[in-house]
Length: 113
Image 1 (cartoon, rainbow, N blue to C red):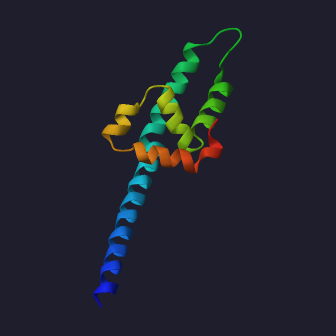
Image 2: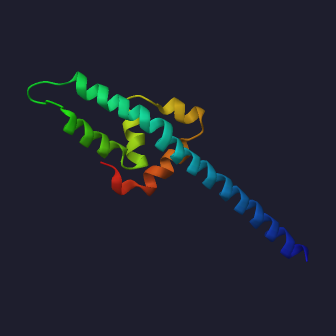
């Protein structure tokens, strides 16, 4: 009886751990889509309006297209947040989201540019 109970208990603990990790990953994606996305939109808008010139007019159509591109998928939001220094590697380490960002990059690698 003990040889069945111990593996069953170990399996339940492992499943609970996987559920915890999945919830943390979902929270990370929701954080990207809610808080970080708004900051990325502001950063993109500011960057494009500051760098207007004859060659790159950066009118509202350019700004809208750029915002659409960078905010379409969570991985691109993460890339833009790193590019515009909204978040950095230290922030990922402090919030314990390094593994979640790696997992997100693996899952959405087809959307990386």
